[in-house]
Amino acid sequence: MNWFIDPFLSNTFLQHALIGGMLVSISSGIVGTFVVLRGLAFIGDALGHGVLPGIAVAILLGIPGIIGASVGAVVMIGGISLITRKSRLSSDTAIGLLFVGMLALGVVIVSRSTTFTGDIVRVLFGEILGINNQAIFLQAIATLVIVVTAFICARPFLLLCYNPEQAQVSGFSSSLYHNIMLAMIAVAVVISFQTVGTMLVFGMLLAPAGAGALIARRIEAMIAWAASIGILSVYTGLLVSYHFNLAAGSSIVLIATIIFFGVLVVKNILLFRNRQIVGSKDE
Amino acid sequence: MNNKQTESQNLSTLTVIASRLDVGYQSEPIVRSINFSVGKGQSLALVGVNGSGKSTLLKTLVGLLQPLKGDLQVLGNLPGQSSRQIAYLSQSHTSGFILPLRVLDAVRMGRFANHGLLGKMTGADEDLVIQAMKNMQVWNLADKPLRSLSGGQQQRVHIAQVLARHADLLILDEPTAGLDAGAREIYQEAIRNELCRGASVITATHDIQEAMDCDQAMLLARKVIAVGRGKDIITAQALLETFGIVITLNQQNLGVAVVEREHGHNFHCDE
Image 1 (tube, rainbow over the protein chains, first blue to last red):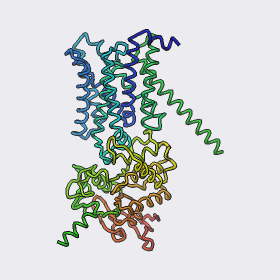
Image 2 (spheres, rainbow over the protein chains, first blue to last red):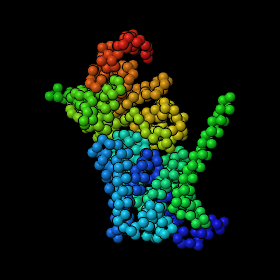
Image 3 (cartoon, each protein chain N blue to C red):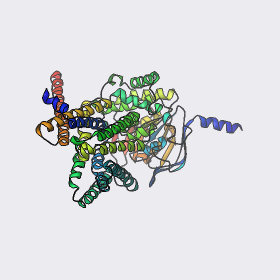
Image 4 (cartoon, chains in turn cyan, yellow):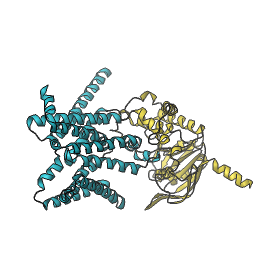
């Protein structure tokens, strides 16, 4: 029993990591649900990398990285919207172009500085064991914003997942609520660069929500499953990383991915058995 | 004066009025100079091949596309301004395979337009939802996940969602696509109920018999071939222009009896 609880009781940094990670799990569970249901995975991934130059410039200027990340996210979303509106190119192409463009810009900025390497690794992979009260507070605010937004926009979001045209003809502007959804993804990505990092947050958006989609029969249940699987991944990941001296953020995302594949395998076994039972009854 | 009064009375009973209307996309008009009106409790069927402009006209009526030219009034307003009173069934439903949604929740979505973001659903809403599900005979599937149903069953659920809206104008894009004969009967009965309570129904269809059953039909082939009472305008010549095939009509039951392609291949399409 001590093996499971003691590390958290005796280490403040692990308590912080657990609280921060749980908040990331809740925000990622909500946002990830819509990312999975609306097929926005690519834009989520692109945002994770697209915020890099913003953070790099912020670090260079000595201002908080979160401000740079926010500017980077706004530039990405605005750029994608501009390219898709002004050209006949699909949003996939627009996202891909800005994705590599912003990533390249980030690397160019980083290459100008010799002391940057450690900072960038921290941005990409997070530093969940080093988060302080201020970072937890920011994460809590962002999570609250996401929870409240999802609650208020539940109806148009559900209609968007079902059919964007149906949202529009029901009196909810599909472009407005689509942009609110993108802003939620941006907030989830930006805020998590201090915990699991901008690269790994993508795993927290997709893996728990993907597993939730396989289990749930209602969208509310999918969000609850996604958040719960995320929290379980954070707890298990931190525990494993503590006992076996592994990278904490990566362990969390790895556990979430393993849970997803576990759910997938179990679901397929159950489906196979059900088909066999139905088949034997038919005979 | 009397004439003006009669005219305004007539206008007040019209659900849709289109005059010299051009529809399409900004760079590409699809159908030009459309004139028609639909009265309260009346039905109109748009008939034509794929790409003839049926869906484009329907999308313009619900406000998803802007009219390119001409006048269009829907329920006394510009299109897109009466969302509470209009129910729309589109051809495609995305995320159908992954969206975790029970049949009951899918039909309940039909009431969202009446309550905005946070308005509370009432007992009356629940009654409309249940009635719509019973009308489309999906009440027994209420607790089933939508994604576990067959294509035809899903289409019945989508139609139930439209019925739950209890709208003044129903705009349905190929509602019978994927429905078997029994489900078509169920659909037709539900639409008769809607018309009886005073709702107007505009449908895009490939089914000529369905068009014959409507108060009006419009034959489209990237232009208006004919518009008027189905029995008057659906002639072999009009169908040749619309579909590019020669069709012989069986006048006894006003159904389509024999279809003969211009190229000489004969086949039956009895309804």
